[in-house]
Amino acid sequence: MIRSEAEYREAMVRLTEESARLVGHRERLEQSGLAAEELQRVMDPMDSFHLQLREEVESYERLRRLEFNELDNLRGLGQLLIALRIGQQVSQRELARRLDIHESQVSRDERNEYFGVTLERAARVLEALKVTLTSTVALPAPRATRSA
Image 1: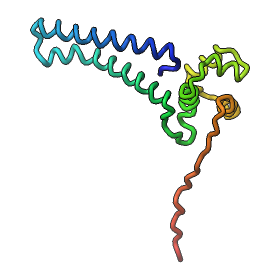
Image 2 (image 1 turned 180 degrees about the vertical axis):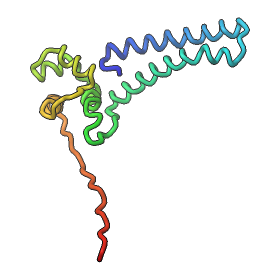
Image 3 (image 1 turned 30 degrees about the vertical axis):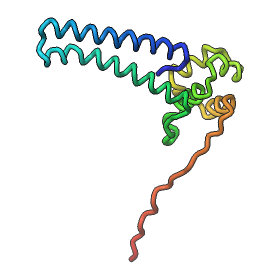
Image 4 (image 1 turned 90 degrees about the vertical axis):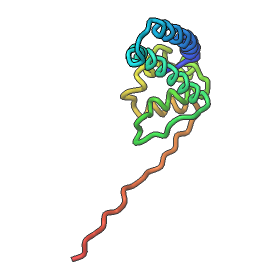
């Protein structure tokens, strides 16, 4: 997951370089006379890496537009906290300043996607970002009762 503008810029450079490298590699393999099936077998892992990197870049761009998934029973809370910071264009350094903690702590928390974060800590991050998180509760449908 890309978590900062610096990582985003680096990923964009890698993506551009990787695209050119893939085209060149494919051309060399085609010139070597490999059969289509062999060519595909060689290129699949490289194409897969390239696709993953492109998806990470697109995901970061969605976060910057404040487009993110809903939570389900608080699953994904850590990713949401990161997304909110990115979407508001708040750096890890600035968030650390607002929380009065060291920047390395924010970096660690985000690297671990806030795994095991307490609700109190999550609430502090939300407050530091000036975000209000609201929720809805969906109860299961009532069971039908049997009459005697």
